[in-house]
Image (tube, rainbow, N blue to C red):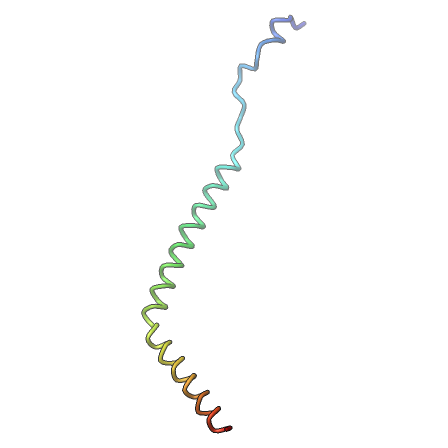
Length: 72
């Protein structure tokens, strides 16, 4: 039979904390690192070929201007 002293005492065993918040934090951190890696390599790739992209855009705009001038 339990005495009043035993009932009033708090639990002596520490409560087990859940593991899922730490796993979620780890997953988010790894995803951010991966996203940063992809972002930086993509930006480097785009800027290395940016001059080619601008030349292609200039060619397309000139072509459209010539087509428009031919219709007038």
